[in-house]
Image 1 (cartoon, rainbow, N blue to C red):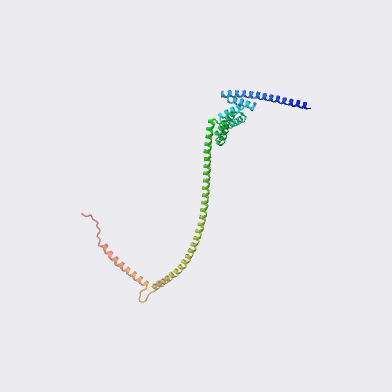
Image 2 (cartoon, one colour):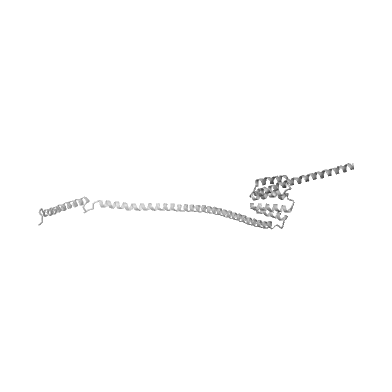
Length: 284
C-alpha cells in the first residue's frame, strides 16, 4: 500500500512537472508570438502607419499578458496622437504587467505625464512618486514631480481664492438683503408716522375750519347789519325832505334850463353862419 501511494505520488509529481513544462513552453511560445507582433507594430509605427501599428499592438497584447512592451508602446502611440484616455489605460496595463522596476518606472512616469495633460496635478504627483520608488535616480521624473507639486499648490490657492470670493460675494448679498429689509421696515415706520401726523394735522385743520366757519358766521352777521343800515339811508335819501325840491322837480328845472341854453346857442350859431362870405371868384 505504501508502495502504491509512493508510485502514485511520483506519478502525480511527474505529471505536474510535465504540465508545468508544457505550460511554460506555451507561455514562451505566446510571448515570442506577442514579441513578433510588437516588432511588426513598431515597424509600422515608424513608417507612420498608425492603423497597422495599432492592430499589431492589440494582437501582441492578446497573445501574451507578460509582454509589457506592447501596451507601453501602444500607450506612447496614443499619447503622440493626443488620445490621452486610451494612452493612460495602456500605460496602466504596462505597469501592472511589468516585472522589472525599470519598466514599472517608465510606465508610471508616463501615467504622470497623462495626468499633467489633464491638469489633474494631484494624481500626477502620486504617479511620479510611484515612478521614483522604482527608480529614484531619474532626474526627469524628479523635475516633473516638483513641477506637478508647484502647479497643484497654485491650483489649490486659486480654488481657495475663488471660494473666498464666492463667500465674500455671498456675505455681501446677504448684507444687501438685510439692508433692504431694514430700509423696508424703516419706510413702513415712516409711512405710519406720516399717516399719523397727517391724521393729527387733518384733525387740526378740521378744527380750524370749524373755528373759521364760526368766525365767518359772526362776520356775516356783522356785515348784514351795515347793509341794513345802508338800505335805510337810501330810503331816507329817496324820500323828499322838508323845504327841499323833489327829484322830479329838479329834473324838470334842469330840462328847462337845457332847452333855454339850446335856443340861445342856436341863435348865436345862426348869426355866425350868415356872416361868412362865400368866394365864387378867383383871387388875382
